[in-house]
Amino acid sequence: MGRVVLIWIQVVLFFVGLLSGGAGAGLATGGAVPDDETVLPRASEPRTFKDAAELLTALEIADRDIRTFASEIRYTRLFEIQGDVQSRLGKLYFKTDPPRETSASANDSGTVPARRRWVAVRFTEMIVGGRRDKQEQVWVFDGEWLVEKNPTERQFIKRRMVRAGETYDPLRVGEGPFFVPVGQKREDMEVYFTAEVREVGDGLSDAYDESRDAMLRALSRNLEGTVQLVLTPKPGLRQVQDFALIRVWYDARTLLPRASMSIDPLGDIDVFELFRVDVNEAREKIGADVFSVETPGAGEGYHIEVMDETRR
Image: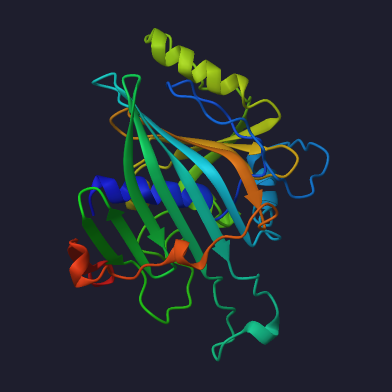
């Protein structure tokens, strides 16, 4: 599976399990982000955690009341060797089935089926070197199929990621076709990562690159009121070989993510941020067509590829 798919999986890992209830952060990469008008779920008082185990346990149920949300998204990639910075701006959509926790939901084997989850990301702009251009790219995951659609280049790629009728959670570490290190059970996470709770600004500086240092410090200033979880992959495990380090910042009141950062083995950094979050359609309804994975018709001029990743 190519790097572009792994980047999409990073988007999925940030949003599909635990969703943002915070106001969003700002990484100064050029191009303004709209003033935040987040519609929040009911929040408690800010919480503190004595260690990562306590935080991971709390995170397992942090998204229990969330059924849908929509938000603006910014994905920023900082390249270590070239020193380049690229950002994509767009919109994120998510919905999920209600929790299935009762015995009435169990199947014939006595297990409770995993909740079905849909995610769609529509990037509309790209910023490189301070230049802002229209560039549309759409990703949709409906619990079985992962679709990449590029309307400009008329390309459509459809990948089956989960076998039809499967009841296991495709996002759970060790079960699915790819690994997502957020929204997991504590015991699963501790198999693959060493987890720590750190100060909010830890890791958000760069003593060797002035421009990168300024961007990271700007992000730090906008993450007040969060708690940072740092995940260090344990050596020799294939499931986490694409990560050198992962940082996730959670709102201290809602325990839902505000931003995430991952560093790959080459030193490249991926940052995901949310803005104008709308939880449970408090502001507006999400259209059913947002999550469509239908293949374009023959007359629409798309180059179409369909593949089955479950056979690999």
